[in-house]
Length: 301
Length: 137
Image 1: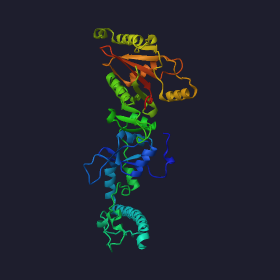
Image 2: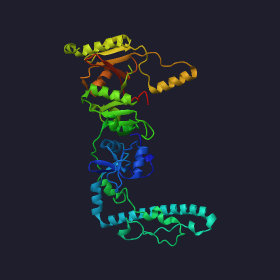
Image 3: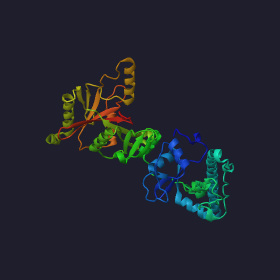
Image 4: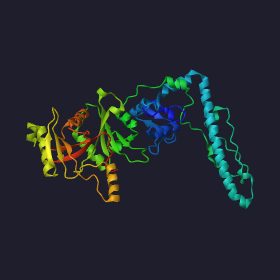
C-alpha cells in the first residue's frame, strides 16, 4: 500500500469493465495510466469491427486476468464495474442520459474534426508553399472549414458529405481523412454518470496471492503460455525488458511433483530465466509480504 | 536402487547424493545433518564457488577489470536436499526445510535440490528463497 493515488493527476481511478466474466479496460488513458503507474500492461484483445476474424495486431480493449484486476483494486489503483448492469441502469434511468451521451459523442466528433481540419490545412499550406513558387496561386493555404455539428442522429456515425469540388485547381483537401471521418467511440465513459457507476462496482473479484505479490513488487506480467507457466514476469515494461521469471502459483499445501520443479527449472534455465513457484501461508494472512516464492535454476553441475 | 528404496528411501537417496557429490563433483567436508523430524540435509564444500548473484558477478568483473584482482572466488559451503523425482512436495514443506537449515548468522538464502533417479542420474538445481533474478539475462 505504498503507492497512493494522490500522486496521480486528478483524474478518476482507471475503470475496469467486467463483462461476461472478463476484465476489460476500454479507455486508452486508463490503459496507459495502468501501464505507466501500476505496472499492469494486460493483453490487447480488440479487433476492428470490420475485421472480426483478426487475431494479430490487436488493439483496445486490454484484458486483465481476474487476479490482476483484484490486485489493482486491492491497492486502490483501479475499480471494477459490472458494465452491463451499469449501462442498463444508465440507459433506463432517463431519456436525458441518452441525449446527453449523444451530445458528448457529437462533441468528440467536432473535436476530432477540428484536429483533422487543422492538420489538413497545415498540409495544404506546405503543398501551397512548394507549388506557390511556380504557379503563384495564393488561396490554397486557407483551411477548409469544419462542418458544423448537425442535430440529426442520422449524421452522427456517418461520414461528412463531400464538399463540392469547385475546380481542378482546388487543393486536394477533399481526399483528406476529415471527409471520411465517422466517430468510433472506444469507451462509453460519458454515458454512465459517476453515481450510477459507483453503484455497480464489483468487489468479489477472485484474488491470487502471486498476482498481488508481483504487483506490489513492481513487476510486469504477461501470460506465461509461451514458456509453459502461468505468468511471464518482467522486471519492467515488457517492451523494454526480457522476462526474468516463469512463475506458477500453488496453494500452500498443494502437492507439487518434483519432476515439475525440475522441468520448470530446466526449461527456464534454457531460456535464461528462473522458474518461480509461489504461494501464501494461509495462517499468516494474504498480504503480499507473506507470499513465499522460490526461484529455481540449474546449479551448473 | 529400487530395492534399496523400499527399505529406507530417504536415507538411501541421501547417501547416493553424498557419494555423487564426493566422487563426481569433488566436494569436501560432506556431512549429513538430521534435524528433528525433518528430512536429512547434506552440507558440503564445493571445489569452486557454486553460485554468484548476477549483480555480484558484474561487480566482480568490473573490479577485476580495474584492479586485476578476482573477487568472490572462495567456495562457500552449500546445503543439499536429496529428493526422488517420484516425490511430491508442497510449498509448506519446502518452507519448513528452509526453516530447519542451521545457521549461525544470516539465514540460508538457497538450498541445492539434488534429485536422484533410479538409474542413478543426479541433477542439481538451485532453490532460492524469494525472487532471485537469473544468472544470464
